Amino acid sequence: MKALVIHTAFGLENLALLDRPDPTPGAGQVLIRVRAASLNYRDLLIARGMYNPKLQFPRTLGSDAAGEVVAIGSGVTQFKPGDRVANCFMPHWFDGPITESVAKSTLGSDRDGVIAELAVFEERGLVRYPDHLSFEEAATLPCAAVTAWNALTEAKTGPGTTVLLQGTGGVSIFALQLAKALGARVFITSSSDDKLSRAIALGADSGTNYKTNPDWEKWARQQTNGTGVDVVVEVGGAGTLDRSLKAAKYGGHVALIGVLAGTGTFNPMLILMKAIRVQGVFVGSRAMFEAMNNLIAEKQLRPIIDRVFPFSEAPAAFRHLESGAHFGKVVIRM
Ligand SMILES: NC(=O)c1ccc[n+]([C@@H]2O[C@H](COP(=O)([O-])OP(=O)(O)OC[C@H]3O[C@@H](n4cnc5c(N)ncnc54)[C@H](OP(=O)(O)O)[C@@H]3O)[C@@H](O)[C@H]2O)c1
Image (cartoon, rainbow, N blue to C red; front, side, top):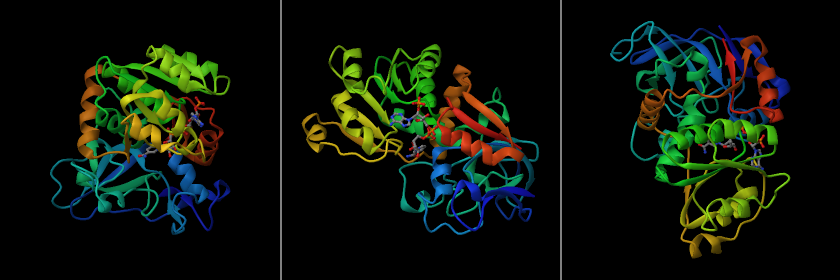
């Protein structure tokens, strides 16, 4: 089979579609014909050597796939050939709190990933996804959507709560769709006025351009009559955290997810004097994935796909994600 592999050295120039042995399912395992995979910012970090410097070459990349079951190993009871499934980002995190061992079970870094024609998963590392979704749409869910869901639900997002989102990448656009479905008021930033218009068309209550309005934390407070927001979905990291803490209300919640904004400093006094809960988020469990799927099915939500690349152009999909031109998710179709 063909797989998208980083071989010999880090760097997007070292991505290639290579022949790798066809996998076969062992006991308790399921063989999937991958029909679509989606990219995350993490895949760029991995390919550049900034996520796992000890990565063993060659490595098949990718953590998010959807496809159909083609064969099952002995003892598999939940799936049969023909079933449509998506994989969990951490195949060993079923429910409950995260542990060190489940956090080390991620795909496309320490172990081979899913951007390949075939992939084997443990039965318990797969979920069924809502019937109304295509393979391409389902492939967007395992990392970005589950991360947004975990962040919002841990923060008790619900009717009447206020949520601040940063940028219009994969996690933030899922957070927009899910927060609106949960009944929240949503404010969003972007470097692009055009993307802000698209976010508002999707349901955001208001938006501001963080390039032309670098004091977006003041804007966010104005949206809440000076109180501050209940929840910040913080994908910028050190470079945005100080402003996020200023944007949050007293007793608010900052879900710490990403590293997009590079380096920066923040004032810990804001956390303690405003009694803000800063919660690290690392994707989520299979139980979270399934709970999110229930809401996606109930509300008939459809993931926002910016662009679908054919498998033969997979390296170009990485470069498109790197450009930051996208809105929502970038997908590869097998
Ligand atoms: N902890 C976890 O479990 C977890 C899971 C998923 C992702 N992540 C992390 O979360 C972050 C987002 O991931 P993603 O896959 O959604 O990325 P992505 O799709 O590549 O998002 C890129 C977008 O982020 C926005 N952005 C970039 N710099 C920004 C800044 N300084 N301030 C505000 N927005 C900025 C831009 O939106 P505009 O073009 O609109 O400006 C850009 O287009 C990454 O750091 C990723 O590693 C973490």
